[in-house]
Image (tube, rainbow, N blue to C red; front, side, top):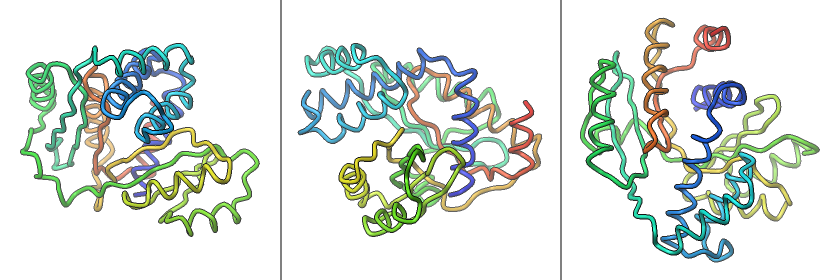
Length: 248
């Protein structure tokens, strides 16, 4: 679990420098649209939409963009569908991909092509069932938070792990406790920078740095695809690999 969060930390720091803002916004807009379409445009009555808006604000998306996405989604102009893919990168590293797409054939073709070009293999849905657990993950700016009081309150609400990454606290909970933790944060007046259900590896696979970097390049290729929302893997983020990423 900590390895996964380490990779998330690296991506956040790296993302501030080189991620394309428009691509980040595009993924967030899709999530807002599908949430509004499925649960209605009122965030107070639609938990998924409320969460999507919160994450968009955490990424500094302008209010106008958020309102347009809600309007488009609730007017049913969009027909995005959720798709998931499971497969393996070279050296047996598990890869789980979540997509939102308006063209299933295009998405299947693109995902299969990336696996093939990078020496991976697309598996059947369910093949990674025992490799990942679905968990709630909240990223919270430390600000003026009292760590001890915060930890006690969140553990009572169902938090399983609280990791200090330096400038943020990363809270992990069971999927079924996601709503309880979110409610507790609301009561405490704390707004997460990001909150979502993630797929956390149950076990990780350690590779030599050179092989591991190839796997992470495959992960980045998937993340560059416009239809892909999230990519999860069970590669162990060793100290040596972290150093190589920071020096890249």
